[in-house]
Length: 396
Ligand code: DI6
Ligand code: FE
Image 1: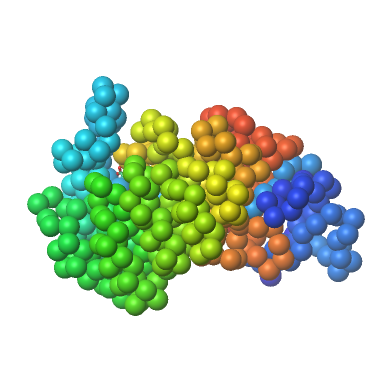
Image 2: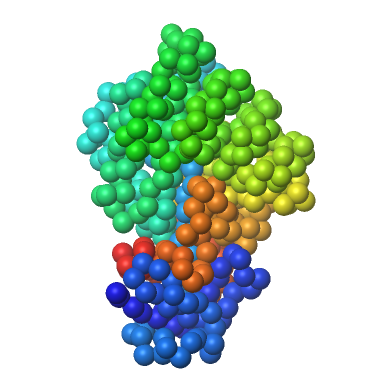
């Protein structure tokens, strides 16, 4: 098994109170064997091959825990309409928005969807991302939802990145369909088919006035539970619908967006151990004014993750570093919270326990940065200081 010690490192793990200067990480195969101050390194690691990092910062590799990165078509026209004053919800009700991406995605082959997604995936990998969540939800029919999930799995074969899939059949009501009939006759049977093919790691939904209400989402969650699949939810993005409370009742991995969540919602998330995934790219793009209740999340001990929400409509963003910057500037997170948001808490939002921290036994998914202080990761805009990425112990 390949072994090496990364020495001369400044270790910034969000579960440690302060960065460790003169640190070292011992990597064996795809795992971290040991990490800590070099002076305390166990004797038996002393003769392992070394790579000196010259004082560079080492963090857990970023995890992008909420993306719609598989999609076809452009929404630039809709961007122009919003600049002229149309709202996201108005465009959606007029048949644009998510449904325009549904039309384009239904018309795209598996190969075409993969070819469109890979440059976006590469942009995230270039910033050190080692784990990426990918949602379906632009098919809204059995064939296309399954195709999207197969493409998501194909990303993990085509690139050195770990992919977690979320089935998002309950993303929008297909044109001309009845919402209840769609949930019962298409969305839930398609979930079962996708699960039977091994394509689903978690089940998601969009609980919103322009999408589905809590009783419709609850039926999807019950179907997920019967299959033993964890759930997560787009909740309280544009209005208060009760989605966050529903997610907490179902022990969801995460409730995402949560701009309109209340103090009671914060309590419920904390009690359920559900992560709040904050998506400042969507808040920015839609020029929203209601920020998520970060102070209440802190006060109640709700874990906050950060993600790009990469999608063609509300967050056409492929930068996890920009998500960190926006989390600080728009939502008031500290740079340390932003780093925790894209590592340890993002892992939890995906139900993963083997990544997101620098600790023995975990995957050696690490990012090495040309910065001296972790706050610099969230500070600059449009600058990528990644020096090297280790994916399962491999520099790539
Ligand atoms: N909320 C979002 O931010 C994305 N989906 C969702 O439920 C937006 C998807 C899109 O506009 O295409
Ligand atoms: Fe989303």
